[in-house]
Image (cartoon, rainbow, N blue to C red; front, side, top):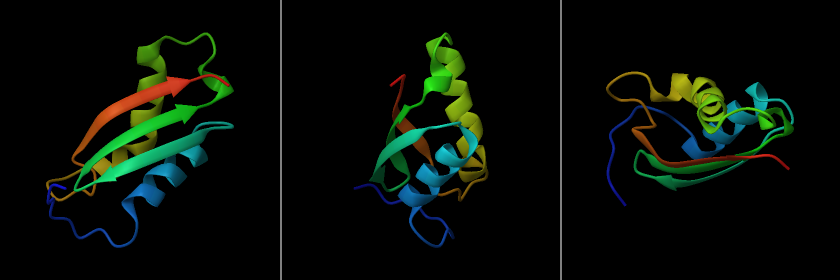
Length: 85
């Protein structure tokens, strides 16, 4: 696993999941990874009728605070998949 320096305290995976599920209606987020690099899969009915880009922008908007700054806990999202139930 890669090393990524951050002052973030707690589980980054939990923080990502909670941010997504709080901001995207009826979302279920599966998150894994570490060292600043994460894979995310989000399922929500709100993605119906939206393009892949629109859906992914919603997810990035939900986690933007975790990606801000030089020592942010999230350095990269290596894989992002959005689905409808």
